[in-house]
Image (cartoon, rainbow, N blue to C red; front, side, top):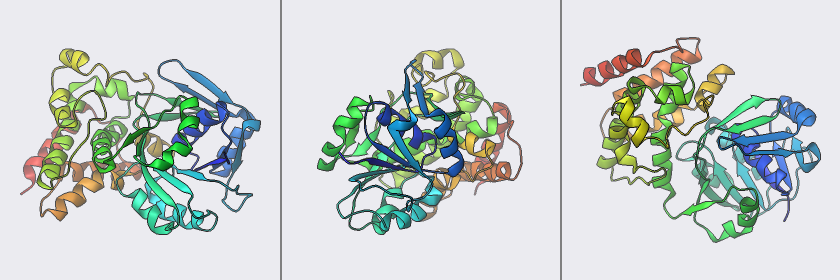
Length: 341
């Protein structure tokens, strides 16, 4: 097998690439120069919430900061950049990929694979989804803080890489309807801004009913719009997606029983949006809550709860509050919902 390319060596890209490299797959990562320097010194260490630990030495993978830097002949590319950089990634890859290359989008959001397919018409572009949280803990260490398996659009081309992912313990789950999977993941990702605004670990946040009820408001609004648009959801965690708001709203003692698997999170894990704010980067709020607002507009409706979360994250990107209590956030979102005409 030719080297597998990871385009976008952030937390997700390094975690997947590190696991693959540690199990013997030839991996070529493309990412920021500063991260390359860190990996030159430490290699890639990966771990998960179940106690697993893996290490890819520096001689087990290649790293470059640009596609023009000795880009290898490859059959497979995993795109893991932030959604805002998808079009740029497609343009860069168009210059170096051979016809028939398998390209999988492992990104947040709904339409990244479509953007890549437009830029790469001679490649086979598939939609993927990463259900778990990954945190960059520094010094080349990337930690999977929650449960889940990689999801990918059903295609015969997956046979090219299935054995490599199996060997790395990252078995690919194939789905015929990835749109339903992506919307279901987005409904879970509606917690990203809430966690970022709370400024506390995911497990601590989800253990408090007021934060969960704030999340449930955003989810109920989204599910109502999906029903109006006849858009299906998929079951990607233990509970069916439409049940989530009801489960989140129960008292803490009951949630510990009903939502035990949702709380099976590393105590220090946080959302990727929290990490973006910490690092002063643009968040993916437009590709999460923004998708809900756009869906509402297409139906002639409004999505005031999700729009308010966008506003609060925009303020946080400019140095605004990131220490909201659950009660405060819930009150603001309720006010937004009731004020909408």
